[in-house]
Length: 473
Image (cartoon, rainbow, N blue to C red; front, side, top):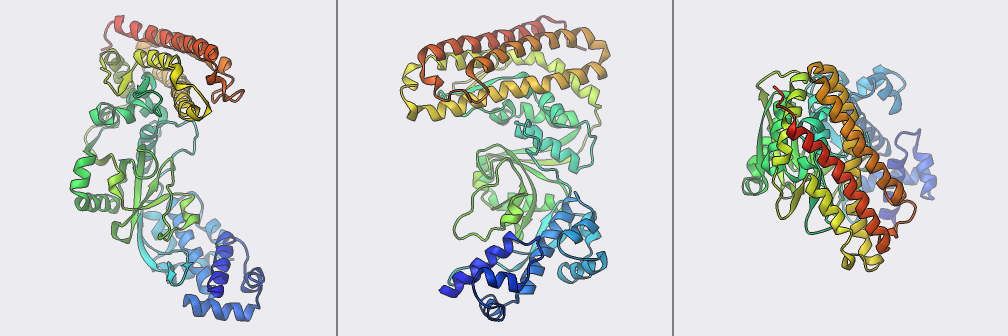
């Protein structure tokens, strides 16, 4: 057992220094043994040489970077220790049975050598087939992209080489996320965007895909669980065709994530999410790789919904889609709240009323959940107002005939922003940086509730204006 622990310690050191000029002598020093003896024991326990392990791991990670397309191949070669592109290509072809440029050009099957994890037996180190769509943009790189469905749509469109105008702001606008507010019951549940909490209605989903002209199919949780094998096959088929799949829930909370790859014949799903998930004790997990993607066992039971992207059915312009989103604002007042999901102006009122529920703020132990929810509400309003400016400026440029309507809308949202800034100032920052225990003070909460109501009143002014404005043609 002692040598197993020594070799595992050596492997951990190798993994932490893969991008450095490491050699067997250096690693042997880290585990307090001679280089010759270390290399001999390494091969006996793992079945491969020290050099083979390092080379296989580096070539595996190099292939992932090539597939992402964010660096030149010559720079990747240098990063992983190859002095010339020729020596890198030669080693790469020998390991992957394809050239680096072949990986760059298409979602090719790459061999993958996973990190070793040694206990009494040896796990990992196997070469397995991995399928990965190159150039699928990462989620949550821009920390203000707080709504995951619009963020996934932005990444999806980029992977399909669509117009760069299909960005986060565009999808947050056309779905209605920017123009809506939500509150979830029972009180102080973690809040989320309109496109997430109302996904099963498919209203925000349909508007997003109509805005970019693509067909789609939506499948809810019960259908997924009943036909898990068939949906796994559909996911693999879609990845093989170079088209990502969207899922609400796969790691972490059930927010939208994008599946862009798979391994082990679909047993492992790979992609981008706001979360990377946690590994179980019996999983072989590549922590270098996981810093870039999630990679999880195919637990589709965690998926609340799957969205498969269909063919392009129309070619609406960005201007047409934004115009339609402004026309759809009239529908916000018609959205009906439920016992669990409160929308629009009523959401602000429910938020304010909840601050007056003294029984929920008795001690610090009760405070954590309330703080998380309150912060999520503040982030939702802040995200809406932050991106609203960009969205309306774009609308003004693309729809000049709606100048008067858009200008007045911008003025009303500016008034909401002024009211919201007073909330943030009073509470001492977005996340109560000044005093995280402030909500335990009754007088503070009641005053804060009035500030929240004032923001809601300005939001209602927007909805009233839209409701009274002649329909946009």
